[in-house]
Length: 169
Image 1 (cartoon, rainbow, N blue to C red):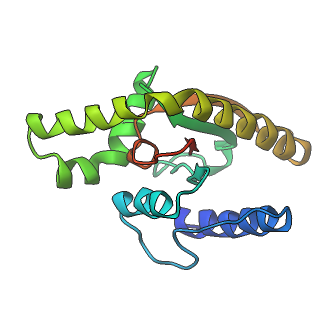
Image 2: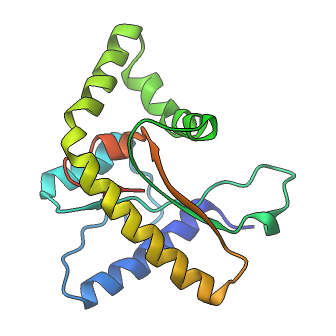
């Protein structure tokens, strides 16, 4: 009965409040029910010269699946997907961008080169994702003991590739 955009906006607003209370400056790509294009999300962070880029998501539950069976936490950083499931997730999330921006095989080279440019950020992003995953999982598991730790994963999500700072999803 809930939509991802409603859940993640609520989580993002709460996270923003907590970070601000700790003295951090927080910039949000959206504070209401407004869709922001993938390329504009990281452009916003890059223009602000942010120190970190965090993208909050809730995974979809396939129609007909048991919604009560979905109780895991995973965190992504930019990198080449290790599993077929992660490759499919990357493709699904990026499909609109790829269709819009990279219409030919030659154009796809731009996507690959953009990924290579960010190689120096991968170690920092990997560390960030690990810290987020460990702390988020521990906090949630204290309240919901059935929560599964789905781990830290790598993917070629456009919002991570476009960021010119350590980033995690």
